[in-house]
Image (cartoon, rainbow, N blue to C red):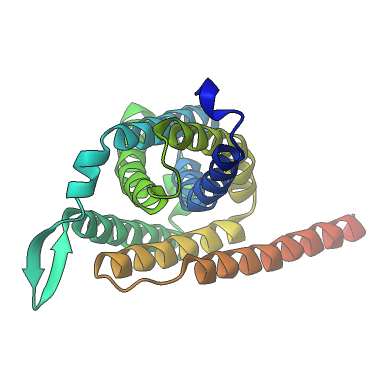
Length: 241
């Protein structure tokens, strides 16, 4: 590691890979923020800590198993002339899980079941949230690491980039989760994002790549519009008072 410090190439690879990991971690942060909104604040904080710690562990573990990871991209199944690998199957399953979960949550919000489900439900609810976080952590970690492999030659640089990105994810997840919890309309927007991300994962699994730039631009634009809506609503409330 010390030998890599004077190398400009190493620093460039670290910065580039860290930026990529942060962008790819947006999906993880959105899912965490939505899923923990169903449990009490203290449990939500613990669930976020567990979820992001597991995200870091899964990413480092996958980086340490590069040979095994490469095997995941080999064809294991052919469906109507389309070759599918274990990576494709995991992405399809994870995408369908995201679409199903987000659709279920949207239905609960639309039908007015949100308040009833927001009541504390004890340890069972907490464990169920953590299990869902683990499933999505595995999917996002796999997608993130396979995408990042090849940008850096040194395992130490990859691990450092992942650790920095996860630290930034942890710092941002709390404020994002609290903002979503305070503003119900942003929760619906976040759920719509999860459906979009799920569709992108399924498409990737079927080898139809949707450029992530389009998705992240849509998320950024919608989030900016929603931010101004929240700001306008707050200003109207102050004038009324």
